[in-house]
Length: 57
Image 1: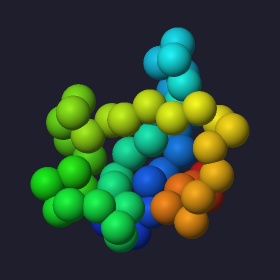
Image 2: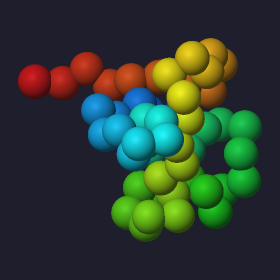
Image 3: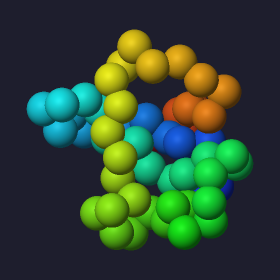
Image 4: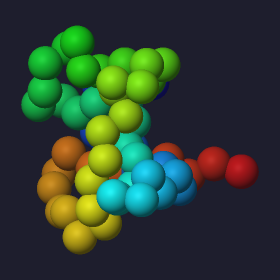
């Protein structure tokens, strides 16, 4: 799934946490999950309605 909110991952890039998926408020070309360019990094202190997480087991 891509395009609802950026999803936090547990992967730390060293500069911040990698997020995947893309958010509702960005250009469609950024809403991909399979390319390295779609893996932006954000600090955990960022807050926004554009970030979320997926609970799974």
